[in-house]
Length: 177
Length: 455
View 1 (cartoon, helix red, strand yellow):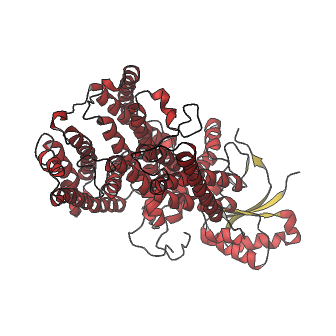
View 2 (cartoon, rainbow over the protein chains, first blue to last red):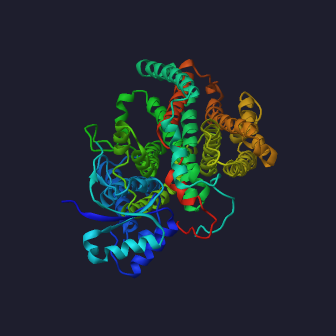
View 3 (cartoon, one colour):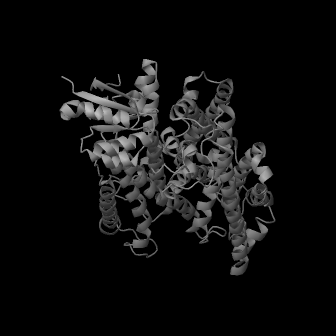
């Protein structure tokens, strides 16, 4: 059976943020917040942190070392070419390729990381409690079962903080096709 | 951050979020306009001519081009550098303005990025065709092979170019595409037809706008933005090393990398201006692409034009100051005067002098004149590349090898073909993709008001 959720619809970011703050003060677990653009306070309220930049740094570090090692292997060990007596291990002329290939690798790996961690990919079935969340509304969702007896209080809280609508529904995922 | 108002409102008309979505998605729902179909038809004709010219090139070889033993690089390289230059604007706009936290970029970056992707695609066509046997183009990919095993020359700027352009195409494509994912979700969720919902649903990657997604999305934007900023500078520096590491008079100068990068951004911004005026005019998006936006681009164009003028003057000064007779000859007898005088002065007038008209507020407000100036800049930038490529090669150290250069219809055809392809790409973008980054505009539309603190 699908999970029951309590959905609050807000017209403005300010109302949403006020409700989020209140919910945090009361230590109520918010299931998810859907916004038409990134709202930092909502992201922070969900207590989510990302180590994406660290991951990207590590990708870059290993890619740079990998490219330099590859260039050394091909140009010095495997098949050294003599360009007018210039040294095969031409570090300065390796730098450009290293920078560009590092960027290339970081891009590809970051895209995959994003896709996996944010769970977005072509044709993915998705859970969108209210379609207006990608247009002009700010949507706050609570898990009805987790709330238990607190549900009416939360409903009141959202309305007090400016929710234009509060309703219950069964969570269901949507398929693209 | 983002608490001060400097430029006035970024979105006019006191709109709410719903109106923003509706306004920007309107061209996707309305019937295709007649001007669109007419331009598309013309672009198809140009592209068809281009494909025929490519067919001739591939089947008969690059002997069908106007190249000769002295001028071994002609229109293909000129057009390649020109297109890559135009392609620089998208990334420059998005990345540098993102890093500098310039909010006015939000109405413009999507179109600039689209333009980048199409322009870089057009650019990549030229070196590929210039290889002669395009079916052997994979030889340039470094992998253990049965041909030696011989590796490519990692010290060659031509190889750097290949890597740089591939990386640039990938990163600008991903930056553009992932920028659109939340907007595709908006299209999907407002779609009424099943086909549209399915198509944009696939494109939207199951985006919902949850905090989990936005958190990583912001991370991805800054990572791609940060590394692409380095890439923008390095790609055109690399293009310039194609010339600068040689010993040809007029090419062998250390000014080339910054000169090329700035020139690229110049032509790119000019092309952005051209497109923005078209979008404003035909799609009536004046509330989003405001006079203030165009004014800001005009001011950037004046500034870059001054840098270009300084670069031209510096080259001439260094040629004289070095006392090198070959450099002196190239600049004073083969550019300022001589066979290619017209191209040289066309470059100087179009790039260094005419954009100075934009100092006048009256001219900046007259969009017809600004539109013409933006076209003139791109013409001037084409002449700049002609100057660099042809004048230096046509007359170098050995007078017995001197030769003039004239393009053939095949050269012209391929160029026209890329213009057609570019137009087709841009028109498809106008028609099927939200032209303005909806979610980004929404995030800055109350800029200046005290309560907006999102970054």
